Image (cartoon, rainbow, N blue to C red; front, side):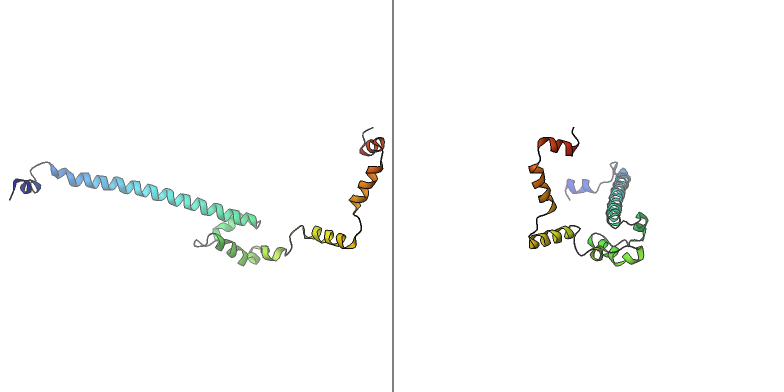
Length: 144
């Protein structure tokens, strides 16, 4: 055996502290890991709570309903879950609320006007305003 191999297995030096130091380092790293995992869990829960709150707000639902949402439901599945249970919460799912957008009535009136060929009231008012004198315009606007 060479002298180098012999020194590797020689326990005459102060290597008895090594296991203690390793255990202390392992505990320190484990504590650090537990803290990091706790932060990740906290941020994940906060993000989930915010996304559930936004969906419930979109449906004008009480935020307490968030406690009833299953833990495995997130994202678009959450929208589907709320739509599936909308009758339980007393709301109408968005797909059933209105098949036409809010401006559909205006579009229909414009189409009917174009088909009839009749000038709109605004066009008649514009013609009348163009024929008024400046004094009449000021009087109409309440200027003098």
